[in-house]
Length: 149
Image (tube, rainbow, N blue to C red; front, side, top):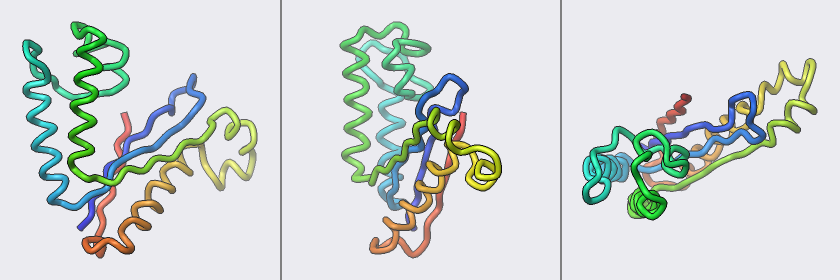
């Protein structure tokens, strides 16, 4: 079985771009990923307390749990979490829509049919997961998870 986890960004009113991105992998890949991710959250950097979660935007901004991190520490922790993704051999996919253009062009009955800018991004996440599963030896079954904050 393949599992795909996706998250969205840019759905708030001020956003100019809407994105859905995520990772696809086997249960074994996800088990390894979750273990390494949990270990990194538990011990992010020497002298730093446990993290509840890694959120890239908070890390880059030095906000929330990353308020006490220097720029170099935020770069280091971002690198470490990125390496966990790379080591897991998970397949990444993402879609983006110019939200302002979508809202300007997709109106009236067309809007009712096509939805907001999140719709094509979400649909592409599902399509890409199915495309990846097609030739994959573990792709006879898939599970797709889309989280929204």
